[in-house]
Image (cartoon, rainbow, N blue to C red; front, side):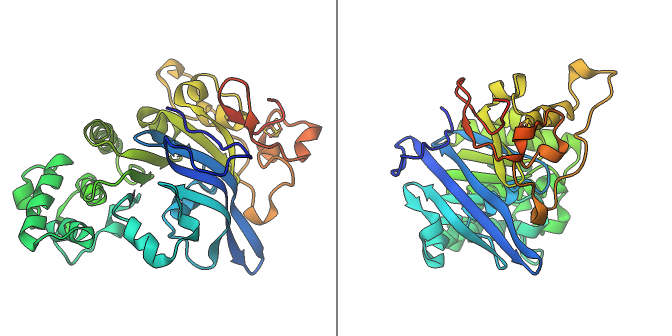
Length: 332
Ligand code: SF4
């Protein structure tokens, strides 16, 4: 399965594609000007596939996921493009229509489980309410199903845990509860936005194992948002590398991690610890993410790119690189 960037001539969604984001533009109006947080992003998630979006803070990856969920609030707005989910353009639907889809066919897990959980209700009630929001179930049937869901996400003694409040659970257990809530209505697409960033390393690994295991057991497609290309490589088949609100490189995880071709992807990979680098100093990408109000007119990575050339002051479009991936770089 491949996640593809659309050809310009395509207008209808492809049959095998669950989600197709086309030329998405999400902007924020500020007193100092308009911030183009997402500036023409296109990618696709085939049914049942796992696609990762990776990039540093400020790359636009989380704004992309919030745009897909239609959770961008003022002063942000979707300024252009399409978000085709199961053939319907989410960007053009009313809030009421989106509410019917959100939480049922399309679910989101946030970085901080406490922001998704209500401290005054038991976890069982919260999972049960997620079910009852979209399914006709009695309270008892929903609670019974909540026990099953907590068991599915690896929470020990789920019959007892359903009656506990979120503050009684560890961070890892809370994140398991939010994943159970997200999976309650068997969504076609689960968006995980930095699901392990707030957790310590051991718990991170357990949550990644859980996501991998769930993907085998339930046929949900996954869109994983992470600053860590190593985390994306563990779960995903395809990766979209974002910088400055744009897609820099897209291809299979194998291609992009073993043979990165965009200088930004090279920088991201060099900054994660790998076994073969034992004893060697990790490198970092020099400089900082540019001020979104003063993006360079050409390639957004130009001020930090070790390979920058004169032509880079013109914007490189994302184009086919000849090996099945797309790259936005004059070197390609
Ligand atoms: Fe570097 Fe130029 Fe490629 Fe941008 S277009 S990544 S500045 S070489």
